[in-house]
Image (cartoon, rainbow, N blue to C red; front, top):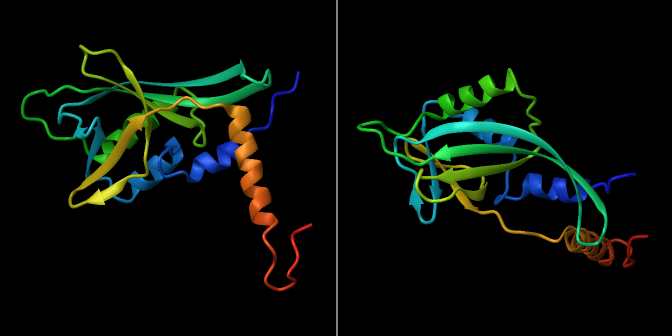
Length: 179
């Protein structure tokens, strides 16, 4: 059984500023390894003592709502949102070193979908996607937003429609559509 090629969706996600890959995140962090890395969710920053408690990689196979086989890679980074006396937010280089250490033991696809699991140890874990980091003084801010559900057949249709709409706009040189 062949899985549907989601390369159009994956390519779009790779440049979507609201849903970056681990490779994009690490690339951005490499530019400022000494900057404090602050994740934001629910309108507030994680506490300065936060921990990266787990990093896991998965290969998933599924059947979507249109009965199409799907497959994708995903990396989950678990953040424990705690404050441990007097600590500051970890430097970007330390976060990158944690991911590198994981990659010594677990295969991490730099283009895999990236999901953050966040909990304060009391409330249930919540799934988030990460926006592209922004430089703010001596900090790097990464906004996390709840990971929405999606309909892959609809996403593919919209990607094709967008491509067709862009292609079928009359060329200024010829006055004709692509084709």
